[in-house]
Structures are given as C-alpha cells and as structure tokens.
Amino acid sequence: MASPARAEQGVAGVRPAEPIALGDPRLREVYRQVYVSLELPAEARSSVIGITSAIGGEGRTTVACGLAETLARDLSVPVSLVEVDFERPALALHFDIAPAPGLCEVLRGEYGLAEVARPVGPNLMVVTAGHVGPHPARLLHQLATHNPLDGPDSLAGVVILDLPPLVNQSWSALAAGIADAVVLVVRAGVTPAGVVREAIARLDARPQGVILNAPRPSRFARLFGRAGS
Image 1 (cartoon, one colour):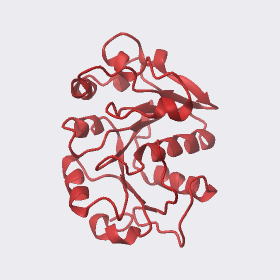
Image 2: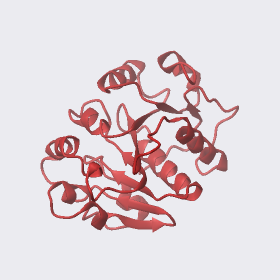
Image 3: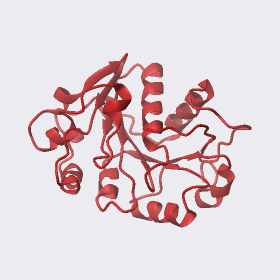
C-alpha cells in the first residue's frame, strides 16, 4: 500500500512541533499514546481495536500495521492484526505472506480463526482477508452478526482490526461495531470535513481516538475537541 511521504500525527489533540516522517521512532510513541488513551475492557480475554477512516487513501492500513507492530514490541501479550477491508486487501503484500486462507474462509466456515493466523514477527500474528469472492458486503454482515472473535476460537491478547472505510460501504459501520474501541484516521487537507462528519455519524458512538495524518491537524480540532473532552 502506498504510504504518505510525510505525516504529522495528531491524536485527540496531540500535536507535535514538526512533521514526523514514517519510520521515525516518534511515530511509535504516537501509537503508544493511542493505545493508552483508549478505554479497553480490563478483564476480557482480548481487547479489540478497530482502525477505520472515512474514505480510502487516508493511511488507515499503514496506521493499523504500525500500531500492531509497536504493541507487539511493547506488550507481554499476543498481538493480532486482522484484515477486514475486503474491497482493497493489502496485508498479504505488506507482510509478504500468502493472501489466503484468511478471515473470509473463517466466515464461510472453512477454517478456524487460529488456523489462518500467521506469525509475522515476535509476538505478532496476521489474519489476511483471504479469498473474498463476489459478495464482500455479505461477508461483512456475517462478521457483524456472527463475530468469530467472540467464539471459543478467538484470538487472545490485543486484536487490531484493519476496517474498511465508513463512507460508501454499507456494512462498514456494522463491522466497526465488533471493536471495543475505534480509532478514526483522517488525512487533513484531503478529506473534506463534511465527509469526516458523515463517517462519525455512521458509528454507534464517537471514535475513542483520532489520528490526523496531515500537515495541519488543528484544522480538524473543531470536529473532535481536545483530549478527554
């Protein structure tokens, strides 16, 4: 997936003094801030964090990968990255692994979730989208109504969902509903403010974190407020 050449990250009011290049150690600190700011269930077998955006091309998958890789380094619990973007899957290419079997095969009852989780690094597993077939919306509905992450074959530890964009995909908000917390990625200066508002309105609740991937994150401050507001 193409990555932005430069990114300044604003997380619910966090604003660095200068642009942060992808791969900079400071970006890992931003991912840590995202994680610690989320209200996650303390007693659950796993905590599920959904990474979404209003539209495609905002850096959502890059953020999901970066968050997963950072937490895998930092935490003593397993971390799993699960691809739920069935329209534009990218994790197989990013991690240089086979694209299938994956989540779609699990939803069709062909595999268990643990069977399709592939180790890609210390403490990190990846579940690709798999072979989607002609009905991705039907599979997203299946995910929302028969969530395999709630079953006996669920993944332990922290689970990061690379969710589809919220606008123009009818079942995206339902898929986001399986997450304990949702982080919205916004590319400031590219994504119209009205589209961001529409994306937020599609969620059952306000996103618990926002990453602004752009030179001027303050432009969107009126949409999200400051940290803790």
